[in-house]
Each structure stands twice: as C-alpha cells, then as structure tokens.
Image (cartoon, rainbow, N blue to C red; front, side):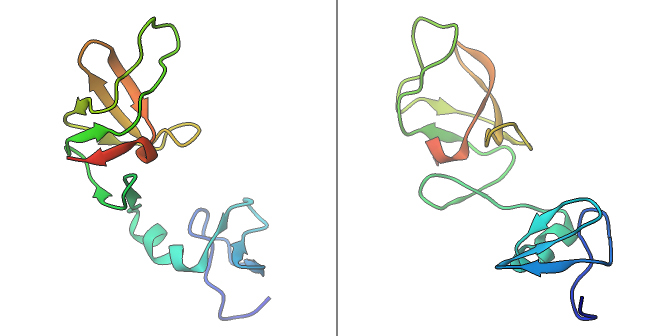
Length: 116
C-alpha cells in the first residue's frame, strides 16, 4: 500500500490498492478507475447517449431502436420522442427515468436513445 494512492470515493477508506487498471477499497469493496476519482469526488457522473452526446436532466431524446415492453402488446417504436428526462442510478443500466406518451412512467437505457 502506497502513500500516494487516493482514498476510496465511496467510504473514504485509506487502505486502497491497485488491481490491474482499477483501484479497490478492501473496506467497502468499491472498485473504480483512477480517472473516475475526480468525477466521484464532485458527485457528478457523465451519462452519454448512443452516439456519445452528454445527457442532462430535462433533455429531449429520441428512441433509436424498437423496444419490447413487458406486459404490453405493442412496444415503443424507433423514433419516439421522450421529453423532460431525469438521470437516475437505475437497475441493470437503466439510467433514464421518463414518461412516454401512451405508456406512462418507465426507465430506459442511455444506449438506446439519441439526444434530440
């Protein structure tokens, strides 16, 4: 353990160590890339759409591929516009919380949308 390694951004533990390209905290089990340390310290995360544009709360996005919706006879068609998105820490990569006309509230992955 070296003195120049940064503390854990999640629990501020001081016993971090390097494992391949990642930093690891043995106290809480958090793993992060050293380049993320600046982002984690400020509390901001960067979420990008399918073509690399940075998304933010309140943006309007367009669905780029047809999506099946569990429990619905029809899915969401490609080209559907979604207004006023919210970025969240979702489950399984679903990091956009939104309301789609005709379907209601749901979460989407940023990899299936494009900023409008």
